[in-house]
Length: 137
Length: 133
Image (tube, rainbow over all chains, first blue to last red; front, side):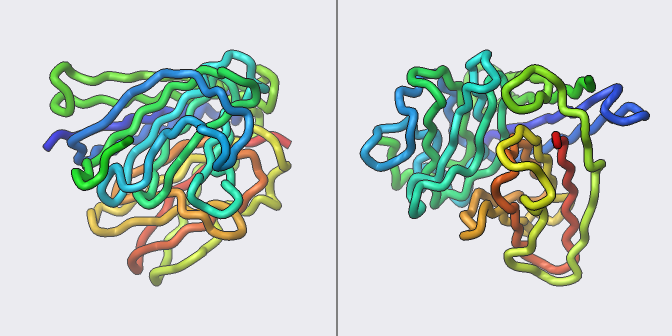
């Protein structure tokens, strides 16, 4: 069994009168994962669109750790992550250009992505303990 | 203009044949511009005397809608069986579980409440929001 370690640092010298520095670290068991960079064709959510599947339900046991970066350099070109198995495909995270998100995903959720404009570049990674009973395709 | 930097590193020495080291950094900006976020809630902690369900942690009413706020949440527990479930919006769509020591960092547009479930009594959650008016 392997382990995946995540380190997050949040720092600023001027958002407050005193500098802030928040550093946290977590480590979790993981035996599988992917790191992918690709283009997102869709600009809307919905079952009629293929979308880019960031995480497919039941790919991991219990939960997965997900990292997503919107590679577009324009801040107003957002990457929308939505819960594709929920009614109405609710957006769960909206990532501005050049920014990233790191969060846990319940293994029952399918997380898909669409962009403000077509063919936006996305980078994402998923780690966790593989559920051998399920495959991605 | 304030400058706040977020840096994330994902690493593993034994998950892949070669060591994994992914590092990404960004400056936290207001919506649609490169101007830095200039407001900060500070880091807060909240302890729950009992296990809770659908407890509001972040109220969307406190933040301007359709902005580029950033949200940090951490489960400070050291008991590996204890977790917070993070939920988004009025229908409480489950995002995922933060087990002991786990954290999340996401952009937050201020349009949805963020609720949590605590799996056990006595758990403490740590959170902060960088935001814009």
